[in-house]
Image (cartoon, rainbow, N blue to C red; front, side, top):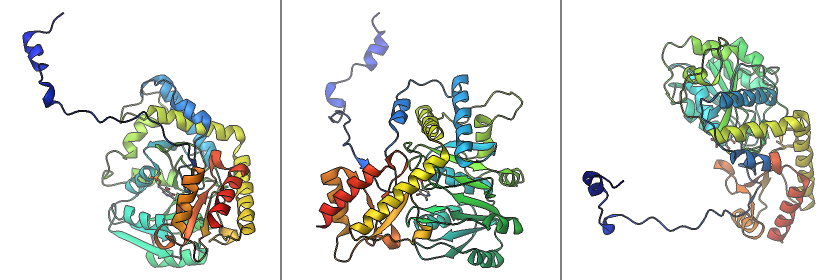
Length: 395
Ligand code: PLP
């Protein structure tokens, strides 16, 4: 039927008044092999999962998939924490959720800073409290328990942030004794596990970690977009004792809980935000791939490939920045030899091999390259490709 006169008038638009759309080509990204600090290439099955038609975010089928993703995540982190969810957003969103929910203004937060992400922890927690203390270590080194004890005695924190895996330096922080120290001071232990989850032995419950977050885009082989977050009993208790509401609406886990976590009563979930459905498919699929391989096999694979890479580096005369004992198998910082232009090598790998690696951040800019073999990318043939690219770049 023809439009009414009024409607027809609305569409009687002189052509010249409509701005033209940009004329771009079809989506056609280059086939990069992403061997930097993340993201790494996703598992092929994960891409397939993302292309699966959507159901609604409140659909019972979707809620079931979310439950499965959460259970797979508990396995991945070796935790029984009921509050274990994929936060809609990247690792930083899950991270900010931890500070926003577990800190009240005036609380003392202590951050262990030995890299770029430690600096971010100071910045992030300072948005939620006026009492941020820090303990520092050179980038590439780790903290000893005695150093942490000293800092606890000095600052008496309520929340302690530490990176299990510092992606800016490639250092793996031992966590033995840290949970006991935290309990002694009635302090929550918040661990950044973005570059360790799935790739390095990690036991949330056995190690007494009260809260942790991660990202999917590293050793889990999932594109960025949903980020793991877990709170144990002590963290939930702190949340329940809050005097003020969480100062971040989107990341208020009291509200998100009603959508993502069953209260056991069978009550229907309530809408909080429209979950990124295709991302949840990807997230569940990536964790499913990991569970089929077996967590310990994935840890072992990352370590084997890491060692293989370090041996290969030695053969071409390159040295890792971090001591072997504290080196992450997932992400290696490699010293740029004197006289070599690090940026040129990065460009060489990209232009000639379609391989992405990265330079250093902060105080390690121009000092190291950052090279990761994570998740789907953690395999010996990728090490060989990278070493071949390096040989031609350095000759
Ligand atoms: N923490 C660490 C150790 C990281 O490596 C990253 C990202 O690389 C983040 C936090 C932040 O995660 P995202 O970039 O996914 O927000």
